[in-house]
Each structure stands twice: as C-alpha cells, then as structure tokens.
Length: 84
Image 1 (cartoon, helix red, strand yellow):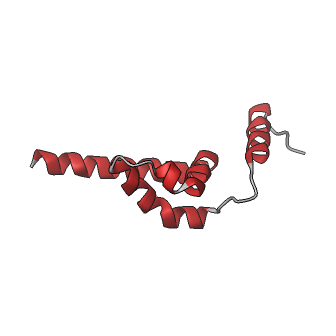
Image 2 (cartoon, one colour):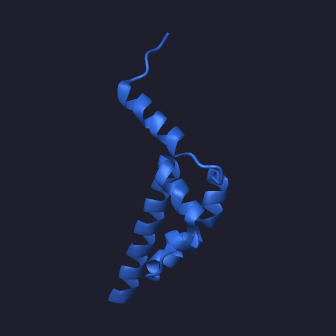
C-alpha cells in the first residue's frame, strides 16, 4: 500500500473543508475564464462579477495555471500593442 505524503494529505483536507454547495467544475470554469480575465484586465472586480470562477481558481491548480498563462499572454500582447 502506498503512503500519502503529509503535505498531500493536508492539501486534500484543506480542499475538502473549503468545498461549498455551489461549486463549479473545470469545464464551467474554463467557459467563463476569458470573461473573468477580460474583467481583470479592464480593472474591474472579476471576483465579484464571477465568484464561482474565482472560487474554482483558488481550489483547482490546473485551472489556476490556465488562468495565469492566459493573463500573461494577454498582458504581453497588450504591452506589444502599446509599444507599436
């Protein structure tokens, strides 16, 4: 039987305890991710407008990585457009 690392177990318990009734899955999060990022880049409160997406990003490392990659790509594009 494989042993689970203490840090992995703590992370799983943390996620379980933070789970709420109105959670969304990765697919739904991904569908709203572009809007979430647009709001942030426009200086608006994306977390207030799309709280379920925000919550999912806090709990899901995979979607969080997608979010970070999208933000970085769009910020890079905006920077390139401003220099031209």
